[in-house]
Image (cartoon, each protein chain N blue to C red):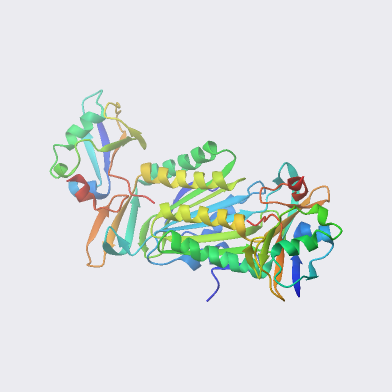
Length: 148
Length: 148
Length: 80
Length: 80
């Protein structure tokens, strides 16, 4: 079976994720996509390079998918995070959830992305319009500033 | 330009909706799908037939899409509601939103589906495993019971 | 004057019609339309004050109707 | 005994390496690993107590390490 939490170097396919969580018992499906945007923390961005402690990140993604499904009752959860060089408008993360009811689907989706941002060992280096690159934390601030 | 709020008799295509709200300014895309599920209010369901006061429903869907985009700042919102006979696992409604930030994207998506359920003149007749059919309200209760 | 009354879903089933022409005195309101509908067989299955739209916009019982208006009785909506 | 220390992202840049082998006394803990790392040039760019994982699970400074363990220093994560 395809892992429910996984890393990929290929573009994330929205339709595939939606199909993976579809079940006759589900009345609501929610797909979250985190996308590379052109501005972060006031600076023009041309792309983002994602890297990971791959073995551990895969484990944590899988653990979050399982915990999410346990926490919010009968649910299907799939999490895919992309690694490598991404351009503008490309999805870095896709989270699909299926649940009988929409209220739980929204809570589940939100919990999953927050948990991913909190604990999965993935890093991003932003590429700026001026040609520079910097490691950024999850809020988009350069890591060097955070440590000062 | 394709209306941002619209009715369709064709299957709802998740990938198309996601593409419609993608912009370089958006960091978060959220797609909600309402899906026909096999049980409602404790009864086995085989399908749902959706109908509408079409001219007014189209107007309200369009109005909700515009209000949603105004209410939550720079955002893109597309709402598609399907009419006709739907089988299990088929999507009756698709709502795609794009926003710079995920917090607003979640709020926006949720506001839009609640508003749609509150005011768009669309009705559903559920088909049950025992061969009967009944008009149901948005909570899935047969309308006859609601009026008693 | 006359207006067109549209019926949907369970209301159309109750009254056995999806569209009716209703004759009204001049300066009539939505309340007058509802009073006419209440005289029809099957109307006992409708609530006393159904939601109403005039020309595809939600309206109240005091909304004035004009000749040729499209008045719709809106059953509990169930989209989504 | 020796353990492998993995470095990522800004920490790998700071120390100029993505993997190191560190020699330790028997019964060493994560705190001992961090003390060894703190002696290396570039380590002044790391926080005093970085997040650490041992064998791919988050660990604390008091976690014991065993010969051949994989100890990873985890910069602030930025997935999503």
